[in-house]
Length: 233
Image 1 (spheres, rainbow, N blue to C red):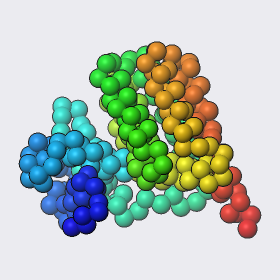
Image 2 (tube, helix red, strand yellow):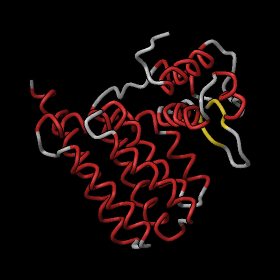
Image 3 (tube, rainbow, N blue to C red):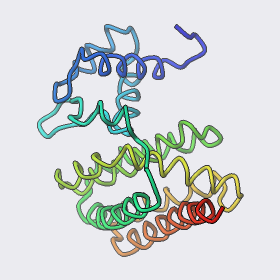
């Protein structure tokens, strides 16, 4: 055991091993958070954080009625999360634009207090993680998934979770490009997400959609610009 790792990282790796070795197969339900916390002798919040990381990577999903399940595509996601070419990237950006602008509008209209509490919790984690890009990227994905949950539309939530592994890749790459080129600071990226939360909280659907549209345009410009440069070399 690497004592330099945080508890949630250790639990994340353990859950990955359980999935990879087939101890819990695709479609099967994980043990309860309480039982896992007892087994690994950690707090329930640590287990929740590990589960959040694996959900952001598309390996786990929460189903209506409760419980966390290994996604049917989990093993494929582990084996292949690469976006193969410029066309794949363009298609993903188009899907994100359709799903996420619509999601944030619905979230602003239908969010409840539990949704606001969850979004606020993630925003707090994002602020604490400024300067730690590896963790910031996971919180970034989780924030977008929490917006989908706040729509109160289970089908839309499942659609977002189904592309979360590819989202993780584009979020990681776009953040790296922004910060490397100093087009965006980590603090500015955090503020942009907080503005989304504020618009959802205020039930400002049009304002929320505008913020998300601008945000995704920046993602597209950063990633497609780099793709163009690679093709011209």
